[in-house]
Image 1 (cartoon, rainbow, N blue to C red):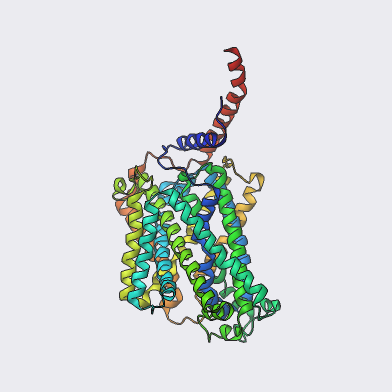
Image 2: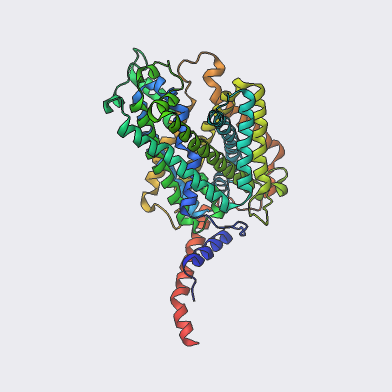
Length: 516
């Protein structure tokens, strides 16, 4: 008898993993919603909106909200390409194994090197920013010492949950999803419906942003309000080995992350704009942190305190998701023997079925960066400036590699694919990605010194340069020469053959049973 239901999905998962050259090591206990929750809490519209609300309004005025729509549409195209790739290659680590199998191990190494540092720095910045909310919740001053203690505390709490296993990671991710939805959608709708101070037409009024110059340049400069918000959906694929029926569920989880995150971010941003009693002061840059006052005037002191609890939960969940994604990438690197200490880094706990040593690294390195920030408080912005650009470059490397394989004859063979529309979506996703990267490199308005103008590009050059130097001097790629690479077309043919044979066996099985 053929397996059916969850057992059939599990059998198919194991068979596809075996066809890709790997054995099962993880506990497949994560379903669709838990997987989406992981990507959503990494994307964290609450964190993104709160961080950039005042900045984007002071640069571009209320019309900056439309960048959430523009970037959301562009990143949806990217997520569709990722969906086809992960459906054929549902492997832990996401970006690294995808690049290896779509291009080769050297390209995979340098792209993953940039991506892992971007994740590590992002973990640090989220933990640091979350410290201010923890301090506000307990009514203490956010001194550098308090900021350090709370940031390290968030990192250690996330490590403890991650270490306890995939089931607990999934549970906390779902709690974080609920906190995010309460913090952005519910609060945003409340502000829109009951605390509106501004007309909806304000979203088409710059309120003098950009001065007397043409508004197009001003609007482009405000793109950060969307670009900083829409990444994290790739985390759904980073834990592919821990998801049941992953070839179907992970692409859907990525798409859901973008759609729900976009609606959440748009609702929240719009609610804060329309509830601001003195919007002109925010646009003029006179109120650099307006959200607390908006909350206080709209919710009262008790309501604002409740919102702080929700926010802290969301930050913990965001750090948790970032740690999980980074540790799986390190594990994938080490599993292919591409890093020093690969045997140690690729260790998977037999008790908890998680890469414990990789998790430890993704926890301790951000702690060290937090210590550096404690001694140099002004360095956080410069240290983290390249992170988003690094992530976008890693994304577009996968999009470019997928397009290259298509031109070489690859037809994605995952159970989830776009069919004939795949090529058009791939081309549009690449065009959008190049546009986004140019916007990220473009100097921010008002910057004068060379370092401030080009800090994003300088950070990328340092990280990429050090990676290339290590790659060509230490040759880490030579240790995994026997592991498959650039095999997208061959694997696609193999998977189609396996499914065809399985279908044939399923048809013949009743006849064989009858003969017995």
